[in-house]
Image (cartoon, rainbow, N blue to C red; front, side):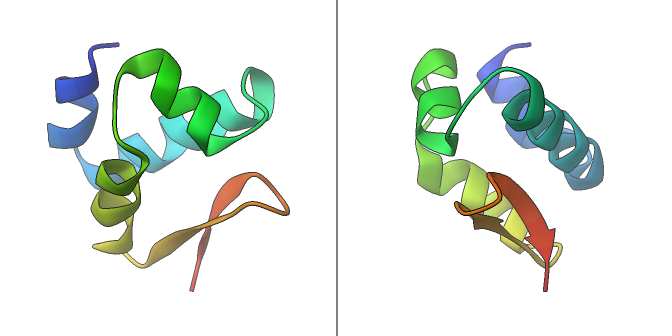
Length: 64
């Protein structure tokens, strides 16, 4: 998936896609962002808009 598309699609689809990648493929959000050429802050800001924040202990975005 293209990085730009990830940040413009429905945030709940982005949330699902990112959490799936974190669970199955990447050990940290930083690694996922590096692989996709995104800034970690871009993804965090996008998902904060719908009430989710990154929990590094569980390596996933969790609702507040």
